[in-house]
Amino acid sequence: MQLHAPLTWITNAITLLAILCILWNLGAALFALLFNSGASDKMLRALLRRMLISILLFVVLFGAVAMGWIVPKTLFL
Image 1 (cartoon, one colour):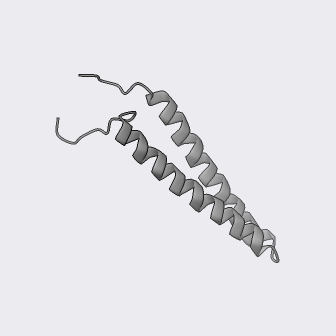
Image 2 (cartoon, rainbow, N blue to C red):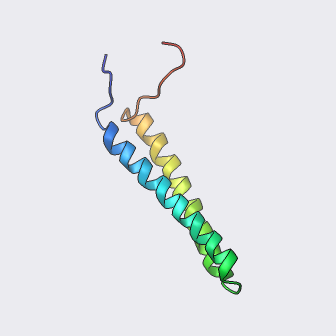
């Protein structure tokens, strides 16, 4: 039985990078909402990017689990 999946560090790095991009776009949308009164298109684009990155992250993680790159931890061993 293999204790660690072979590409664990790569999937961790991709996940961390995606979460940072999600937070960055959320902050950009908040900045556009608070300081750019007439720039609703900037806020909309930032929120759209955040949504697309979130969906892409979900698909990538689901695919990584399906291919065995990520081994989910179970509650009961």
